[in-house]
Length: 639
Image (cartoon, rainbow, N blue to C red; front, side, top):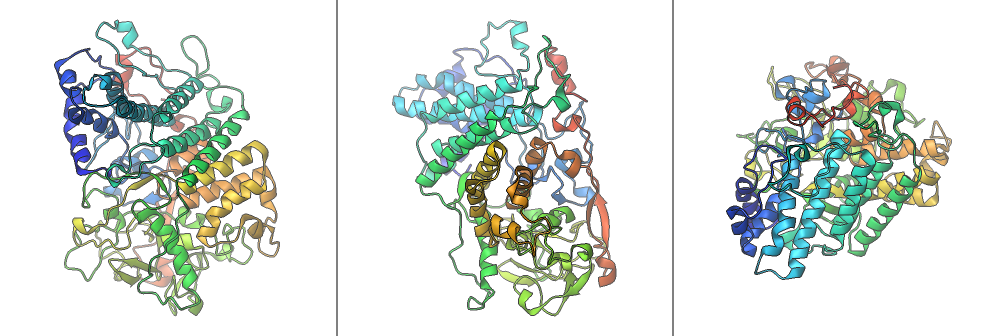
């Protein structure tokens, strides 16, 4: 977390105090000397609070990040982290990959078991009143932060494993063996507990954390935003009336873990929560981010400058630290970049630099995600009649009026031209332009060219696309401490608008209110409104698609996949929509990056595979070890 240095240090030192037991359900003895000392004074009790935060997933790390869990990114085989291996079908029950249940190690910073995190939260909740030099208001706030984190950790476990045990209190030393062997609760009971706990926490949280020393700590704005997200998941097809996958998934009493009947009222709750969260956030001064600084290296007087500004709006909405759009940010608890942070494999090398230690150049967007972005007209590439979709892989000349995102007079694939600003803000391509290392680079990415694969080096972009979105524009890769850090966006205002639009459409279909929520995002992206784009019969292949619930659903889903690309949402969204068979089973494709000629480079090749078995892979397995420890646990279907 990007708290003050004291808080960061306490996160590290407190872990050894509170997590010495291996079993996530270890009994916590009452009145131990360690607990008495820990909760004697405010300064030491702060260890417990810091430790509760330390279990938040750290998606800015390459090797322990769920950002790589989907079909958005590809890496060379020798570089594959566990997230990619899992998506290739290499998950196991004996030693699960990327598990929040048991936690997992990784190069750099691993992930602790979220059950340990819940135990840490319960320790604080149950003991904070013992502290003698805190007033009751402070105690209530800390307790509320721990309650929220406990609820959030349950939500993450639920999102990854489906029905889970609910651990609301730590077990006393007198607990019997059978009581220790907890059981999985139904999905609806889990959601109810999570939402009730968040509501309890919100009452004692500050409305908005403002001080720089405490940014990232939980407040009411964050609590309401996450509550909206929990309700969105609860209403989504994976969890709401899922008889297709889980008609036979029952507990020891024969009760279904997943409700079998679709409940439309859940969308009503999700819409109301999203609206409440939006209102609360806007009332505290939050706003959709617009870049207001200078645009160095570009001619601001040129008529095309708007396109550059639109790119900056999107890219800086991620990398400008603690900006107006960020509702909750979770940053790396160090002041300088580290080799395992996600900027290192995403940042392109500078061939003219004497050192490229912090720039690896092997985290590559896939062809599928490149094709997901809209055209300049705000339409999907297969729906825009002005876009040459059938020959999108063909090569063409770059025109003069395209020079602010591609190199005039050169040639590139038609797929890379006439696209929306978010495409150019997020993805680098051959004969494109990238602002990085404090310069504007004219990208030349065929083999043996300045930004392409050199000889047979292992650090290269396997798809021929570079990831710009997660790299701060002023980061320089010649040293790790020159990578500009920023808090990882756990939830942004744009995400809330998209939640609201989705819930409203599912509840009652298209409306001006749904369109308005989407258009806030589209306006910042510099593309036409939903109505203007889809009502134009001269451009839209399926005119007025936005006027039906089903058509607008697809539009909203694609808008989420574009706006929130590479931020760790896609894996969860596609699963909760029950669309994994559509997205997670196709080969990963890219350009032929081992070719140096134009004719050979612009050929599509397979660079990897994604494997998904329905319904098995919709949830991760509980390990054999946990099942043997606790016979009351029932394994997820298919494992």
